[in-house]
Image 1 (cartoon, protein in one colour):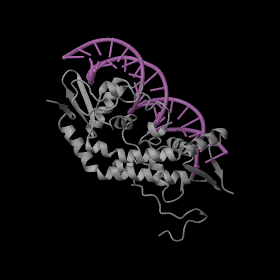
Image 2 (cartoon, chains in turn cyan, blue, yellow, orange):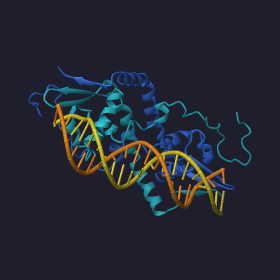
Image 3 (tube, rainbow over the protein chains, first blue to last red):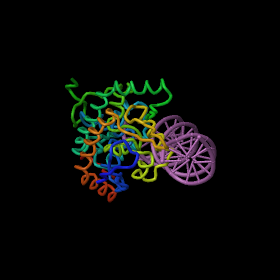
Image 4 (tube, chains in turn blue, purple, orange, yellow):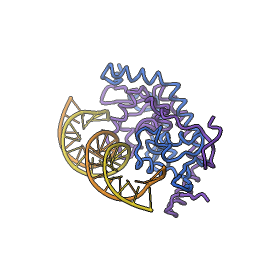
Length: 140
Length: 140
DNA sequence: CAGAATCCGTAAAGATACTG
DNA sequence: CAGTATCTTTACGGATTCTG
């Protein structure tokens, strides 16, 4: 298809984009690499080694307020990624569900990618901050 | 170590969380599964099959304004994930760089996870909307 | 301790009009 | 076509105070 190409077009000849490719409100498309809110990933990571208490979570999540932490925990619980358990005496714990734990795999893949390409990312940023043309290219 | 455990604690005995585990401003920790802004992932996905024009990108990105698309494209270019090329006659194309293309791998992993667990996610949401207790558990 | 309720500032996003 | 400029709206997160 599109065998003839487009007049004057020298790039790759590709199919037009599907206008509905992001239409169904489906996270597998909508959030290709963006699960949850700002804190979700970090919370999941904090629960990796076992259940944690509310106050315990606030330590590495530097400066997160109780409100925001509560909101994030609730959102994760709503999606079945974590479970809340109230023990006697003001003790509440949060733990990964099997579903939540399974999320560690794609998370690790994302972290590995960032580590692998960290230098390239830094270099790109430095290059673009040096030249305020942020990578504007001109085709001759 | 923590061999004795915590008095009255019946869960898993785990090391305390490292207070500095998210301290270095390093995306590999900070953004375990959250690259870029709201649109970054979708833009990367749109460029998977080859270069695309500005207007072309606006189609599947339903309703994105020129301003927001410009901002997102600029941010991606700044990080070296996409390249901008201005062809003659008001024709500007955006294409994945090798670095940007390499991001498709972790993105695919994330998408695959979501597809695999889609039903569980839906079920969890329905269960929590049915019972407004959003998964509050009580330990006996 | 584990939140809930309220107020507030910023920043992201959207609408609209305009430009080379 | 590919943006820019400006204004308005909204969402997000933070600070503070209060409660069982």
